[in-house]
Amino acid sequence: MFRRPEQASPAEQLEYAELLDAAGRHRKARREYRALVHQWHDSAEAAKAQQRYAELLLDNSDYEKAFNELQYLVEHFAGEFSLERILEEQFRIANYVRTERRRHLFFLPGSASPKRSLPLYEQLVRSGPNWVRSPEAQFYLGVIYEDEKEYELAIAAYETLALRYSLSEFVASAHYRRGYCLYKISQRSPRDEVRCAKAHSALLRFERDYPRDPDASKAAAYAAELKERLSGYYLDKADFYDRIANRPRSAIIAYNDFVRNFPTSEKRDWIDQRIAQLELQLNENDNQ
Image (cartoon, rainbow, N blue to C red):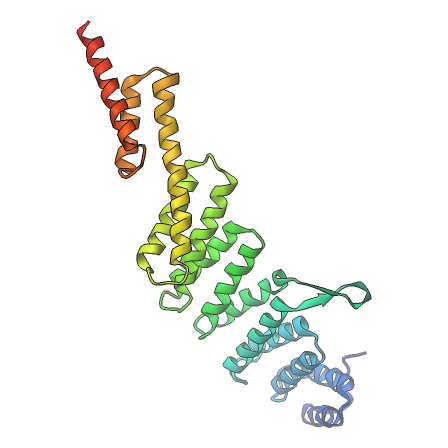
């Protein structure tokens, strides 16, 4: 009943809806635009009615509903409007939803909820994979997941950006943020050598490839912290063979691994001395 048009043809219905629109009767106009699309979906007037219906929803601050109605326009009326203009409008909506601070009870200011914008950015990238702002939308996917501490999903988003939009201005930041997310994951498992090494490698690679980037100094600091942790893993392994398992040959191999991977360590002199002691011990045992 609510989608029944009041005029007999799509042309007459569009004219009627536009008159309501111009008179400021926007709620009624929205209903009549929608009725036209519902009744005469394949008509020449339907795309114009759908676009204006979405615009009126946006004017009424129905942001996510407006985004979805614009998406309906993209999917069902291709070629009858400027795709770039619609994508730009959807991008503006997604940015607003990401940063909007919803009010709580008694009209107190609330906090933003960026996660609500995730499906909007995802849809933008799908609709316009080669659109000029799709790399930025892809980057925001990573940032939002990262802010939500969903680091694995953030890493996947950043890796997609670097692979699909390798010439984008956001690639350097994506590489840094990927390394930082790996760093945060390694903090969750402080005894996981593999995760620590992966994060360390990613941050070192970023520092090497983008030495003048504003984030290069932070990457270097995180990499130094991870290197210290990695050196601890190697030293703990050597110490286990040396002092607990009493396996001098394995201890020598482990100490040499440490020296090879951390040649500038401040523990280098002590380790060289310890290797010499263990080798002497082995020679004495062999000669007995």
